[in-house]
Amino acid sequence: MGQEPLLRTTIGGEIVDLPGTLEGIRASLPEEQRNEFEREIWSAPLTEVPLIAARWGRPQEAHDEDEALVQQLRAGDFSGFTSLEDDTLEAGR
Image (cartoon, rainbow, N blue to C red; front, side, top):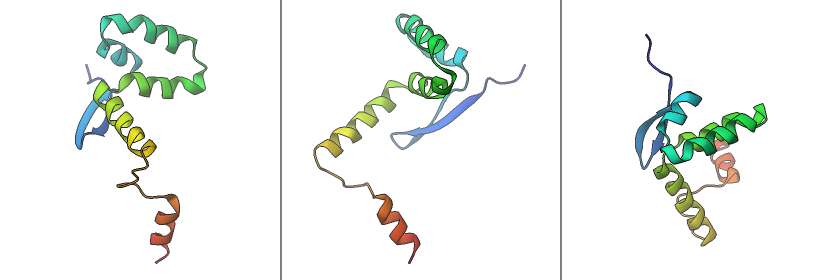
C-alpha cells in the first residue's frame, strides 16, 4: 500500500509533517478530542471543511505560535511584520 498523504508546514522554524486526511487528523488527536472533532467536521458546510481540518490537524505548538504572534500585535509590537503596502513599494523599486 502507498503512504498516507501528508501536509507540510513550518512551526518554530522547523518543517513539520501533518496528517493529510480526515482519518489521519482524527487518529492524531487525543482520545478525548475525537468525538468533538467528528461532530464538528460531519456537521460543517463543505466550504468550511478545509478550514476545520487545518485547525484540528495542526499540533498545539502551531496554535501556541499563532497566539504569541497575535499577542505581539495586540501589544503594538509590529517588529518582524510588513504591511501589504511595504511589499508593494518594494516590488515597484
